[in-house]
Amino acid sequence: MWTREQVIQSIDAKTNTFYVLDPSTGKRADIGVVRDAGKAPYLRTHADGRWNNNLLALNQCPL
Image (cartoon, rainbow, N blue to C red; front, side):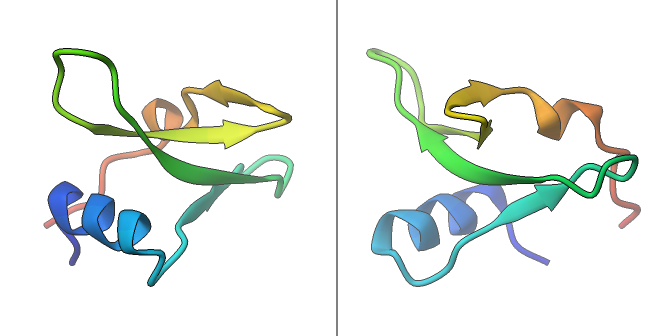
């Protein structure tokens, strides 16, 4: 299992790409790193040319 920090490092290094699929439409949304001034970097999905919140709509993975 990847941590958020590992995913951010991997995206930044361009060694992997990550995405989610909408279960109802099968549409892909790529995951990117957002860097707001004064805040820690975080992950967010990007689809249809804009940032969106597809990650928040997913069920949490059981550990």
